[in-house]
Image (cartoon, rainbow, N blue to C red; front, side, top):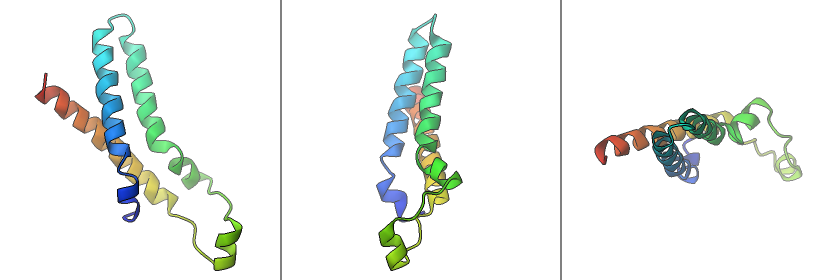
Length: 102
């Protein structure tokens, strides 16, 4: 999990931007506010779950190079937890930015 921290760091700013602009647009659109919020939160959940959450539940078959070299599969559960943490952190960061820079 700790090895994946630098390679999965892109999730944090992407989640922050999705949450910031999604919630900002939902505040401006009176008639479609609930739909935009639903889409925003669905995108955040998808960002956290796909692909590592799916691989944690249904691990892929090891490739031939992993079988020949007896390499272990990546820790998909750890990567999923890291992605979920980064998505939550991005969402929280967008709330702080929204409150700070109104």
